[in-house]
Image (cartoon, rainbow over all chains, first blue to last red):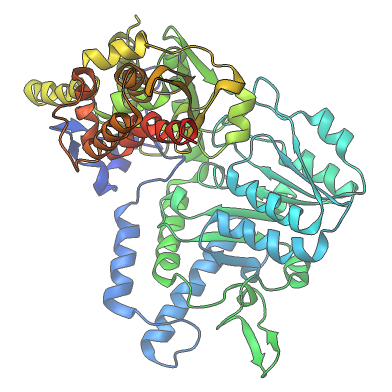
Length: 417
Length: 155
């Protein structure tokens, strides 16, 4: 089998693989592990695993309160990550970065802390027909509670947003536009800047789910033009349990706390309290210290490789995968937007995605199958489930070949080809 | 191209796949028995597997104390479709009591809590599913639905 891409000198996926202990294993009786479920979660390089170990072995302590050596070490490292993340995404100030448990919690924080104060009867929240449940269900809940209306901007056949409908729906009743930067199903990269500019002219805020974009391309929150940007550590080589909420300072300042407890207070009286400064107002309780610190190591890792290089690598691999898969009879790829990320969803006529996933899994290949947490989009596509291969910095064209070959064999097994 | 280094080992991994997708399962999947588009008013159970969005609807009648015309429609993977097809075939002509006993045994057998012994031959082919925890739900979907069908028929 020939590979249509050669590894560039600046980016060597084979060499990068050596940083990821998990990839160096054989499964099911000696099959090399081919991990193509990166849109769900990425693997972790040794540096990130080491950061976790080092924290627990050397300076485990609670942050922000302990006046002792370990506490100061832990606090310094924890806050260092905040600064690191701020500069990584082009935030003006580290205090505009709130650590949460993940993208889902970041969105829920805004839905509750902002939505409950600023949404009311007659107001409208616009989301899109390609949102992950995490950027849909919180808005359903808060809109229902507040008597506001939630509308989903339709998605075209090619996976792009129906911008005409978006513009037609924009009126003073619209208070917020919640949109994914990169679809976890269709791969579509949405025109966030254009959406944000139009939304702002109409007086609406814009929240961007960047869970699938920040790991794969340079993202600068200032250039993006949104008011809120959220993403997760675990899809970009970091640990699970850490999410980021970035928002404009005035917006953060105007929001009420999402959760009450320790660390988020300034003064606690018997019957009321005052809130800590940003971002601590939104970080109630002991945070996920070890994972935040290890997330800092992940940020260092991807920055070290260069987001431009990662992006170029992912793009080349995605193009190659689309080329290989679409050459197989009865394969239909969902989403063909001009600008797309590295998630490739597809179906093979006559084979349920779960059967396909199980079949390729026995050949050591991990792909995802199911509704991909996007049931409204599945209905729009007229399917109950899809199969998805998604690529990251350590994947190689050889792995794409292995997938294509396994899919072809599955056709034979389940009665085609 | 990565080539598997150990041909025998690959054979055994593929062997497990054959255990899961035995010929009889693939046959029920490709040629489902008692699968037809059901009328809305006939549907007695409407089961969904939230994991994958698989969807099965079931109907049946009671005639002289025995089940007949057990039919299904819906969409799903090879395991869920084959299992539904086998179920319709197996439960035809049974009394509700016999049907309940078989459903209980199938569900328990799939969860490795009981043996497949004594079940219809085709149904025994589902034994390969036991190794795949995530697929057990696919196989039990229709049988669980049938419990609801029986409840309604006996109301």
